[in-house]
Length: 544
Image (cartoon, rainbow, N blue to C red; front, side):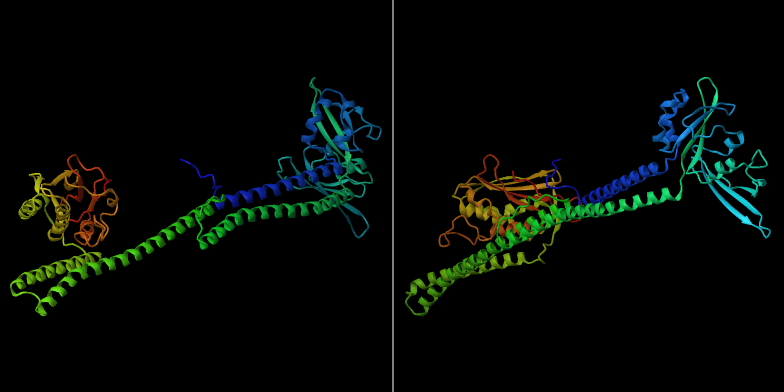
């Protein structure tokens, strides 16, 4: 299937693409903003995580402690110590690291990958004795919240209530500092246990910058400064997408407006504008509508011209016999006609009156067929028997006119729904035309042929034929073989009446473009065969 290159997708798809483009752009900005904040967070806090440690753990596993990138992992104030399975320090990155760690101290240092929220509350009783409440809420790396744990100490750090599971009855000052990150130092400690290739278990204690309020304030200021950049960029992106969408919508609408103005000026219209499918289709529909209106206006003008011509033709057709009647009657009344010629003049008057009556009846018949309420009274009857009876009644007229008749009608019955009186007029008009416009000794053909569920009545002759220039308009009213009104025969309404009657029977009549061998002109009448008493429709066929 050939695609229309002008169409760029539906309006909905265009809006959707624009919306998705805007959304992804904003999402990219937010991701960039998040990346920047994350980077600044790492710069300010240097929180050691399992993901970051994964990049450098091979230095610890292989014992290449000097190569471990302390500043990248822990910041400028960072450091670390490596302890063997007995808790002895076997390597220290700098002198500021503690020289040793007890098992109790190691037990309170937070493991890398775990998050602890520790809250310290100091209570003073009436005697001035202080009680320290330490509450800890642990979070694993999978973000599953654990139960909150409590530790109650007196002023000497003796454990009064232990809901944590400590192995001692008293905390040292260092243990309290490791647990709560309290104190004047700006650092905090994390640990990581690992196995070396030899199977020996070691522990690394990392020192990193404390996540205090100062660092958070610096991060907040950085984020706030970033918003002064993000908001204008967001506004610029919004403006770009809005202008782009407006242009894509307005362009085909402006093209449609130009087409309307061109149509108003009577210019030829085309729709070559590309855009959303709906706008292209609206433009195409408008062009087709404009063409239909132009054709309708052309048809209206032609109808007006035909109406004027028809009135002139009717006036001429009525005027000629009336003039003759008036002339002969006046001659008789004035006594200028000899007595022996009066009978001849009266006969001429009678013939002209009869001709005038037939002419008026023809006009009346055509106007009656033009009425929308016209409908033939159809009855189911054998079309073959009907044709034989019709030709039998017409035979003497044909022979006396000097014509011969070639008839082929099947013996079997073929039933159709027809109005006998109206359909006779169809056959009369076609045969009478052949008799009027051909010379004597012309053979008239009348065939009835069944084709599938239809019957075709072929009426033609081997005479002079119908001029090619009349073949396209032969069924229009007032069309005759001789354009001279004075020398022509008939009104030119016979075939127009025949066509309307056949179509009222839900049939189809045509002039064959390529008559069968032996025919110079051939009319084809198609009727649907009636299998029951119900009404049927005719399927129009292509011209032969």
